[in-house]
Length: 321
Image 1 (cartoon, one colour):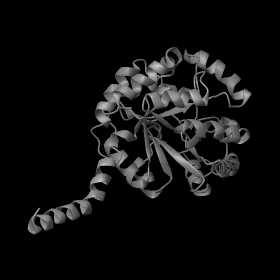
Image 2: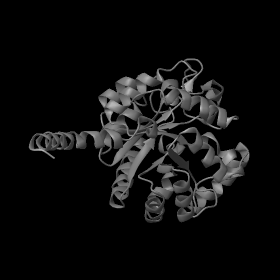
Image 3: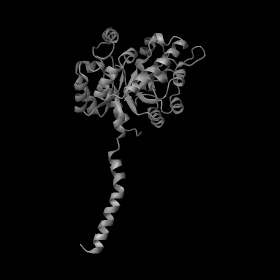
Image 4: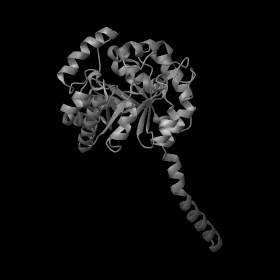
């Protein structure tokens, strides 16, 4: 090789190494599509009938993350006993890991390219069994442990909410000590004033933002009349997780959204993502800017889960976050 060619080739090599870090970073950057998951309360009957087959179907569509719902083998006995009656009423049997151990579940998830960063579990179990929850979480890969709703007797008055705030901070601190993050999923109540105080705002202002995160359910916040983009913008870093639901019509609760009758009354207005009237793309963009990390598609108890998941993914996968 002559001297001129050697210098030229050496210069190209040096130039290429300068661009290598940027190239590798761009190549390895997690795809936006990898951020989309499924909240498994979307299809509990299918999971009860064919657990691994259902997870394989979810993965084949393109979803990468899952959010499980309780109770689990490590939940309190009271929670497990109560669930038997509820599940029977809803027409299916399983919950949690659907009969699998944490180790078995992790193997199934790995086999299908899935992860489970988040679970819903009842508050008493979080208060009483955090060490067992954490043990399972670290095997399966959960990072977030949260509640789907505040028990009725903890939200009747502002004094109740004051006690709830104290419990949330305690649970959040204990979760952090165990390497987890506690979150609260709001079901649409608590957005109307009680005793001149808006309970949800009271929770936001009086819980430690480092210990208590929030999961915003787009459908239920809409039903409560909340300005979703505004609450995300005003509370950066608080809403780490979202439940993505669409709504056939812009509907509101008849009352304050405090009970099962009001929630079930709006189920007919659930829509596949992108098939309704909500600005999901705008909401998700605002959420991402505000610090949201996980987006779970949910269409509670949908009768045609595969179609709902596919239609929703076709829409979500076109959104750049």
